[in-house]
Length: 232
Image (cartoon, rainbow, N blue to C red):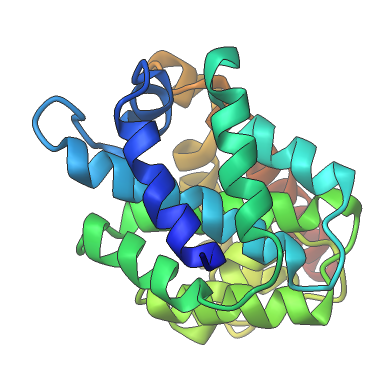
């Protein structure tokens, strides 16, 4: 039996389990498992497998990446063994990741906000070991494209999780030609949209509050860099 047959077959076990994984993971991204259980299972398998294959892109799945996956895509202790089995099967190589990316894109349709959340979760995992390997970068760029995001949008998301030589204007989603007024306005908007307190008030799970905190920190660093450069 191939790895892919094992993963596909294991979806039945997930679907027949207590449901906590589907409730805690799929519902975070907008699925109601009671009305669409088959979509919840497909989505859950897709996210786990895609995360594992992304971690394997540089040839080594580090413990930090595994820990980051557990933090950002939280699941109950009862489901830990099930998730680990799917993750371990998928992490053997990167082959077939395109099918999982396309599956998630199809399930989420044109909801770009949810697709962005999934992509940012993958970026969080990829950056957990302190660096983004070129092969991981290429993998995530390909996934972003399959999710319907262009190169510029991917750079914007990437720059919030990976600290390297990226242009701070990318973090603020602005061209270097933007005026001071445009920079201030965009900075305020991004702070409002990504402030952890706003997400807490909406009852968003803790792992996404953590993501928002990281994004807000990157936004602040980018703005400070531009402000210093321009004397704002």
